[in-house]
Image (cartoon, rainbow, N blue to C red; front, side):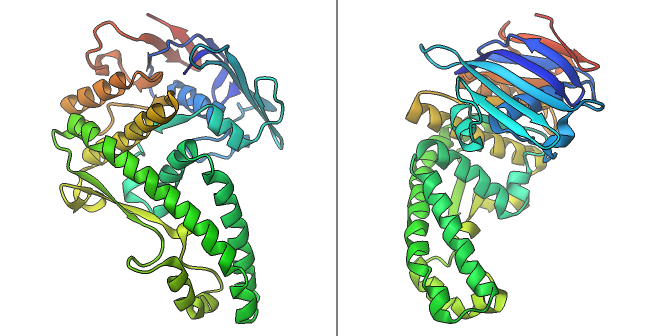
Length: 358
């Protein structure tokens, strides 16, 4: 799958962009603050209706304007192209997929998967478990079709149980939610474990390409003590939950422990190694999606050269190239682009203008 056309209107510094990207490599060169990161951010916005830089959507609108719009046409296999569009005014958003107006964000994410590798990618390892759960659940969402409705039901029951805890209801009223909570939690946990088992079959090969070692491992922590069932843990922690006023164990507290050569990558790996590990995890997700659904997410790589020496840069570039996914990679200078053997389409960005150069 790939975008055949991309139009951007009033997104950050990009007043009007209209390009026809290549199905493979798209190489974007420009100075700092020229708009190249905003170009990648706009593509991400088209696939997720939000920024990957945690910027509120209304602040993405170009200064002095009242609304933004990002539209594109997606080719997926031998089928016809599908039009996509995300429009944002100050207090209103509209998502269009084909002829469907007012589509949901979940429908958008399912139809147009995008992944980003940017200079803050190391946060996947360094920051709290929320980042790693988001990484995990994005992948499970795309390959386990029952995952999202199960996650919705779990969140709904969890809110009800937490409300009972906050209001200091009797134990019988709190525990009345436990049976359904356990049922949905079991579904989430099993889906995550199946996904990680499948990912574990792919990860060693990708890490071998990036590190000359396959010694990157993922330990799954389900959100309650290992060796206990969630039912037993939930029952034993009721007193603690009542003290806290919320349910402090469960799939909503799950985490991943990622190790390099047996050591915690968060503590032992250099910043460059952390970037390669995190990028490898995203590339493994891309490959798993391809194996399950015969499609790949669009890859957005902002400032590939950051934190990497020339050897590591070349390895990551070649790993991205081998995926065959449509990829958009940004660089400060053309001299930073690794050997590409004439492949790829180049764009130059300057003062918010995007022009194809090769």
